[in-house]
Length: 452
Ligand code: ADP
Ligand code: ASP
Ligand code: MG
Image (cartoon, rainbow, N blue to C red; front, side, top):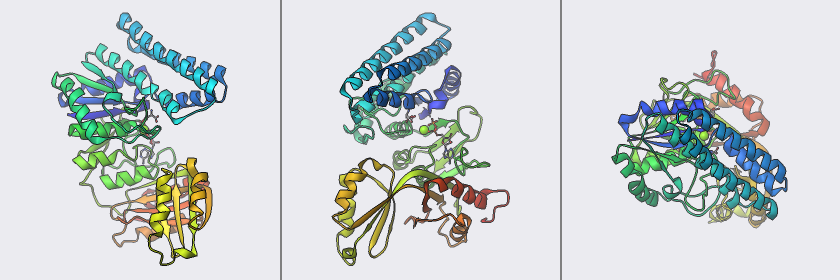
C-alpha cells in the first residue's frame, strides 16, 4: 500500500483534480491512501479572512468568503458535471461549510481578537472542503473513494497552529478507520494539515507531514508527495534559474534542506518515514511520467547536493562573561527557548557568547526579557540563512572553502557546520539570501561551475 499526497496546485481546479484522479487510477493495484491539501491559495485566503474579521473589516471578509465559495462551487460544477444530482449535493455540503465560515468570521468580528484556536478552526476548513469535493470527483471517475475525517485519524495534542502528532494513537486510529477501507478494495481520501483537537492544524505546509504520519502508521511501501515541480531540485526554481532535478537524495539531506527553506517538503515529513524506512518520492502531478526524486537511505554521497535558503529569520545573541566555565549555562539558556516554545535553528558559540537563529518571532519580546537574566541580549531581525547541503561536504575536499569563496563579498553574520557535517549554514542579511543562493548554485551547479 502507498500514501499519495497532493498539494494545493495538484488540486487547484477541476482540471488538476481530474489529473489527480488519473494518477490514482493508474495506482489502484498499489492500494493508495490519498491525502489532499486545500485548493491552491485557499489556506492563505482563509487566514486572511480570519485576520480581516478580527480587525473589524467584516464586509471585506464576507466578500472574500463569497469569492472563495464561488471558486469552490464553480470547480465542483465543472468536475461533477456528469451527474447533476451529485454536483448539487456536494455544492450544498460545501456551501454549508462556507456558511459556518461566515458565522466564524462574524464571531471574530464581534470579539475583535484572533486566537490560535480560531485561526485553526478557519484554516482547517480548506482541507475539509477539498477532501469532500475530491472524493465525489474520484467516484464519478470510477474510483471507489471513501472520505475519512482526518480529525479522527491524525491524533494530536491540543496545541493550535502547530499541533504535535501522537504516533501511537495515529497508528491505532489508522488500523481502525483506514485499513478496513483498503481491505474492502476502496480508496481512503482524507484532508492533510488537520489534527484531532477541535480542528487544530499541523502548521503551514503540514499536509506533507500528515501523509508521512499516515504512511508510517500503515507501514506503507512508499509515500508519494505530488506537487508542481519535477522533484527536489538543486535549489528552489523560483529563486535560481537552471536548478536541476536530484534523482536520489538521502533522508538526512532532504530533511536538512526542508528545514532550511526547501518548501517542497514540510520539515517534519522525513522523520516518520525514516523510523519505518519508507521511501519518499517527490513527483510532478503535471508530468506524472517524470522520474521524480527518491528520498531514501541509499543515495549517492556528494560534497554538495543542493542549496536552500530562507529569509525572515531573527538572530539572537546572548553575551555573558559569567558563561566562562559555568556548568549548566547552556541548559538554562535553552530552557528559556523551550519555555517559550520557540525552536532554534542554527547555533554558534564562543567562550562568552551564544548566537542562535529563530524562525518564529512571535514570542521574541517575552523571550528577550527572560534571556536578559543570563546576559546581554541583542536581536538582529530581518536576517536570512543559506545552507549548502551534502553528505560528503565534510569529507575533506574543497567544497566548504569553495562555498565560502563563492559567497564573496556578501556579509556573513554567523556560520555553522552541523555536527553531522552535511550542512554548512551562513546567516546573511535577509535581502542577501537570494543573491547568496544564486552565487552558490552557480559555483556548484552552473554551466561554468568552479566548485566541482
Ligand atoms: P504543494 O502545494 O504541492 O505542497 P509547495 O508550494 O508547498 O507545493 O512546494 C512546492 C514548491 O517548493 C515549488 O514550487 C518550489 O518553488 C519550492 N521549492 C523550494 N525549494 C525547492 C527545491 N529544492 N526543489 C524543488 N522545489 C523547491
Ligand atoms: N493547505 C495548507 C497550507 O497551505 C497545508 C498544505 O498545503 O500542506 O499550508
Ligand atoms: Mg507544500
